[in-house]
Length: 379
Image (cartoon, rainbow, N blue to C red; front, side, top):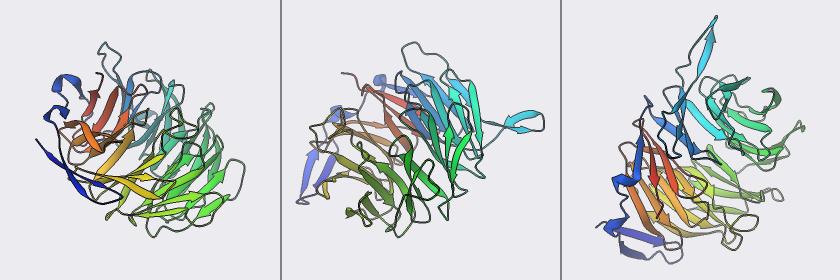
């Protein structure tokens, strides 16, 4: 059995836990989906059905149906117009997001276009306004706007029904890397320019700008209530911001390499799990994941098991488990309260993204070798 070292944030004592051999997920509970011809950077479950979307360097997104009968996947080919013909863009699909009702999928590509597709694979609209690759895109909760962030230093709010650009925001001085909605019309954006802007539809200036990071800001996320904004950076820090303060509420320093991504737990006030503590997970190139009690501004747990950069973390819908995926090809599912691994799986490629279905019964993962795998965690 593997020996696992768990460090608790408070006392930093090493407790050696032996992983029970039974945590390895048997191959019979794993579905490996093959079809992509290049690395698969992203994946996301449909919020209402067991459809898993994936986006790849092969210039396609795919929708895999896991609702029982194995049907062939739907291939969303990203094409651009050359004269009178449509030709493959040959550019990476960098981002995807389902609308809240699960009827449409938005994709962002290195070809500079965002696209909206129906869940059965028809191209509904092509959103062309960015002058360069799109790095991130998100639907708002209402499902009427899509937000995108681009290398062209701008962020755009699109009308999802008409496909028109509602407003383009040009406040960053370098590529915009991530965006996140605070409400249906207010959002934050971050950039390689080290700044974070909070913008609102109809406002011609940023309504707030947060300075403090000393290197590019990789990801930003509002907490479930839209009260606190978390940001992570190549400066190895995690910062928590409030609209009522100029300086960070918390400046969390513990990782010793770049922090690639962050996720809030679906717990605390305003969530389905109101009595549980609100946590923030941070994933770093130092191969660790840290869990932070944000109210107190302390690291509650360090999840030490991966041996390569951790690219993705995802909380289960009930907030009790955390899935982590790393370039070491391993997917670990941790019991957050105990800080222990309860399921593990080693894939055939480095893991770029992990995600939970809405019922919390399956974890999807996308990998560098073109595979997408689904772990069935039903008892």
